[in-house]
Image 1 (cartoon, rainbow, N blue to C red):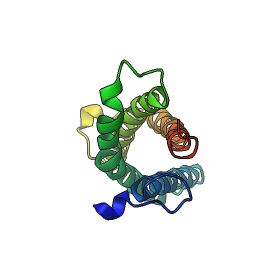
Image 2: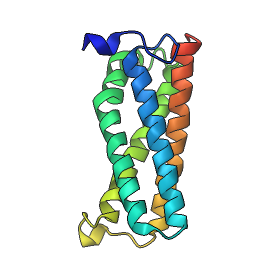
Image 3: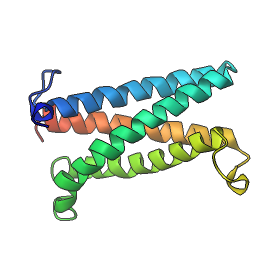
Length: 154
């Protein structure tokens, strides 16, 4: 674990774990975009595999690293410090990220026919597009948090 607290490789004040997290999340954003393009070109099997892989990587990163980081570093300051430093942006990022994670996992489970028939919604595109937009918004906010904390030092 000491290795993960060493200085990162992106030239900021971030530890290596934060740099790895940023890279993995940006990688999943690229994968989600590739998957979206595969669906647009009617390559649905490849689309399903890419989106499932990306959602799985994202879920592992969020649940193993980001949740703990929020609980340890941000949650104790809520609500008193909500308007200070990166607390507000991080909290909005966490809320949008949690919604996109839950919706994205549900869409992936639905796309792989792993939900009960009664939960198989009809307007699949709406759910996929909503999950994608929310995920990209959460990613953008996550990059903003990284910049605030490790580059600007807010």
